[in-house]
Image 1 (cartoon, helix red, strand yellow):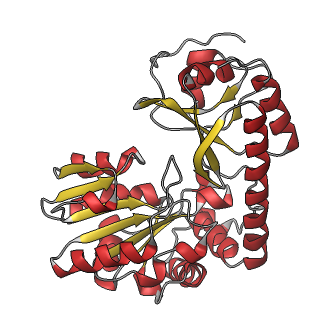
Image 2 (spheres, rainbow, N blue to C red):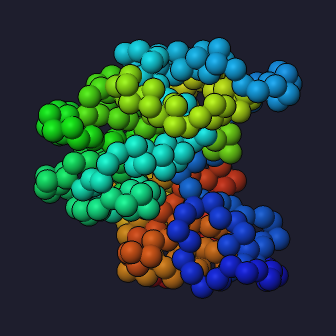
Length: 341
């Protein structure tokens, strides 16, 4: 490997997955390219349909966005397309939502995706960190990622509905981020979205098209309209609207992809167990391992051109995404063969 000059701090642990520029600065660029296992994005993307080039030339119109909202409502189980908000990734909604509420005490059930707490903090709200939904205290807003990132923890949907009802009674809000929920649709709260409950869905992770930047919020119609107004006109590109509509309507591909991801996650478990690594959580899109020297393992893999996801808050955690098939698994297997914990 050769080292590359960079203004990035090569010693800082990454705050997100997928940052190959930072990986280049830290480890040098691998001759055979990076095997990026640092995200929870499917390595088996939806086959891109032929795109009508007129969608790249003209501004996306309301008819195309409305068509996507209708398809997405059906795919996710929403009661009405008016509940749907389309955005350039669910991250855009995560950053916008806190600006729509007065000062609130916000319980973020963690450890979890850090951008939730960041967004509410940056908008002047008070964060109340807690480890379970039973310790949300007097919070007016509660944020839960289900299944959770990075440990895959599941929260009982019935309990979440109870919390949403309690919050609705006092003008509060439960935000349930189901970015990794496509594998287990029966656990989704989208059908129950309404007063006191907003659900986030990510398109890019399950469909393996994160660069398309497409995500959704499902909420009561009045909040959905407010979000759409705040996001402004043309929140998503025409090609993203077109591809999203085609992909979300492709139920045969969706069912096949669910089965494939579950199977691939099992193969990854076998590989990690063979390397004497303890799989302590995750979803079908990633696994969380706990090891006494997880940060050292991150360095070990990085030196061999494989990028995993360490966590500054926990030196024992390392998240590993799905390899892209047999060749990727073999490369990971070779890198782990000389690891000694």
